[in-house]
Image 1: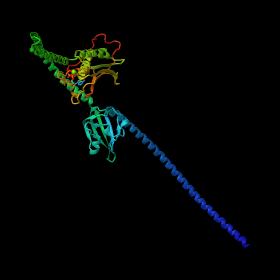
Image 2 (image 1 turned 45 degrees about the vertical axis):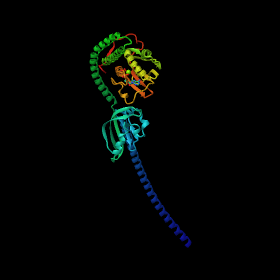
Image 3 (image 1 turned 180 degrees about the vertical axis):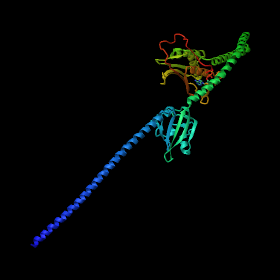
Image 4 (image 1 turned 90 degrees about the vertical axis):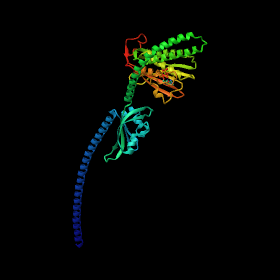
Length: 439
Ligand SMILES: Nc1ncnc2c1ncn2[C@@H]1O[C@H](COP(=O)(O)OP(=O)(O)OP(=O)(O)O)[C@@H](O)[C@H]1O
Ligand SMILES: [Mg+2]
């Protein structure tokens, strides 16, 4: 019985404890469930917050992308060149205008040291100077040398780039090309100079010509009076030669001073070259020059140009005569043509190359000046006349010369669209372009 009682008591206790345990377990489960629900709510909140933040971030990235694109297109479309560098002096940005002015591609120069692409003639680099000195500079006119060795006038401003905390993080240079303006100014100055020279020349030439003709006539008469053995005859012949030289100079002066009228017609450049070479060869024969070889390389299919063929022939002839005079010990004279450039219809380029003595660096910038000559009997008007003729055709002349090796004159003549290849060299046309006096 006792055994039965203890059995019952044990069972009852066990039931109670189990019930308590279940109760506690249920409580914990409930709390756990509540915590889980809370956690889930929180996770959902966080998810929502994150989705919201993500959406805002996406908007911001899009906005930033748009701003970057906008700034880039702004940078790309402005006409001034822009180059930015970091603190190490490496190029970080270069816009389209800078590419055009410096004739370089941004992709080629990003990351390179700036002095490799933009430096002054004296070798200094304002962007680096600004980084070193911490100072900006505004609207400074400078002469720079591009990578291809071309000199250009630019006006530039350099400013330091700062971050939000006012720390310098680089520098930017904004510049514009003034070369064309400077070139026009020089041309205008030359035109003024030439106008004055021209007016004076015309006056003097008239005054000189009449007495000169008298001197020439009387000397010729005098020469007839002397026997060939008479030493005075030689003196009179010298006078005659002197008056002839003077007459040539005065005639050239008058040609130079006279306003240039172009008689335009459609003409083949290779034919003008042929006619020029005919005179060149005749002139060489006359002077007994037989150590110069003449070459022609004009194989263009389309070399018709609306131009004044006689004036161009005169220009080519002046250049050929200079070339021959520069080859006193013999050499090669080559006239060639080729198509050049892509602007509009491009140019026909005529090159006149000699293997003569070349032109000294110190005088090369003076050779087109009227009356500049290094020859004892030169008038110094040959190239001034060439320049006038080529300018009248809207052309340009470039020179390449190496002392002791030779010289090449390149003449770029723009091809115009109103050329009819079938109608050329037939007749003089009424279309006469008036060129202003003393260009
Ligand atoms: N092909 C050349 N090679 C070397 N020097 C040249 C050449 N062409 C021109 N020059 C230089 O340029 C100068 C000017 O030439 P330009 O034809 O104007 O005058 P010039 O030949 O001296 O006299 P002229 O009036 O008789 O032509 C020359 O005196 C010469 O020093
Ligand atoms: Mg000459």
